[in-house]
View 1 (tube, rainbow, N blue to C red):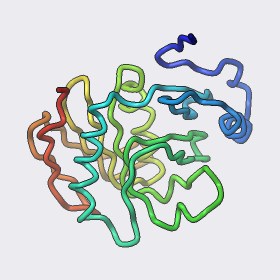
View 2: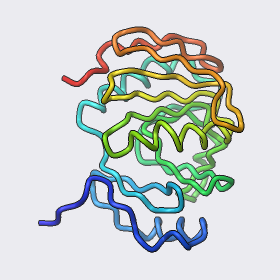
View 3: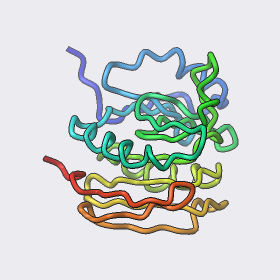
Length: 196
């Protein structure tokens, strides 16, 4: 039996270029139930979400689907979006992107195609979801970033992307409705987002 740390980081990657990290990530044999991202010059392997997170991801997708911008799709799952300007590659829990972004044979999707990203925090990813990803998604111009803080049981929506991340934000506890701004302009009902 192999025991894996909650959030292992591939050592020795700090001096590699972003392109070399992407190549190494492509060659990495990630165990089932884990995802790999490039964060702060390292390849970071994290476990996928707890089982009940699937219900939360589906609730978000169901509520946003009628409000998607034209020619966009919503999905959750293991897709890697790259942000070369920031030398990051993230696999967001939920994403809305232009349909044309997936019409490629490459397994690295363009982060600039995103119009919405949602991350469901876990003890191993929470810090990056609340700091590094806020800055990178905002600087890349992703219009809306939703952080579902599963530990604090609250939802934060960020919008108005800027060089610092985002200039606008609203936080509500799970169980309340959260306004999701343009290009979606809808209310997200967070009832049912708590752990069972």
